[in-house]
Image (cartoon, rainbow, N blue to C red):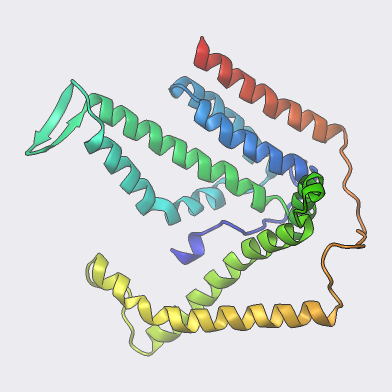
Length: 266
């Protein structure tokens, strides 16, 4: 399960999506997320699925790699679907057992919300899969630069967000190593019910926190050794600049959002 989490990982490949300006991909991801909440019915999801399939095919990221990331949210997905099935009121009752009842409206809402969550995870994960941590930092900092006038530390915020994303796969790898080391000593993480399996994970937390603090301290020492002093008077080897492909990509995202808005009111 730990290896199936793809959030924060970067998949190196040579594609037009990887070569896009990071600011375009960040803004495009926000527009994509907004578009999902504008979808009125499954016709809109059909448009989004076709668009997402085209992006994944263009990015050259294996589809199985993206699908593998959905295993990590299986319990959240199951919980969301279950809540909508049993708690959505409706007149057309399909099945009833005591106070619990499944209605046609509840089943429709559960499938609708489950599809939205799946598309949300798949689409947003493409941001980190196709953007390196350095590009992501530069993109976030560039987008936050206008807020420097009100005292917002754009570079520091961008650096913290990027370090947090970069630490996700590192901590997952460290967790996997700790689990394997404890399993070699006789620990059992697979048998028993859900509560028992959750309790068996508690001994992992202490060495995981110690490892996380140690890595954070090593990172701070490395940054100080390189005379890192924040964003003031810093220059970049590669300055971000919009190209023809970037304008085309933003235009496509705006068209997608506009189509879903029209679909909602027509």
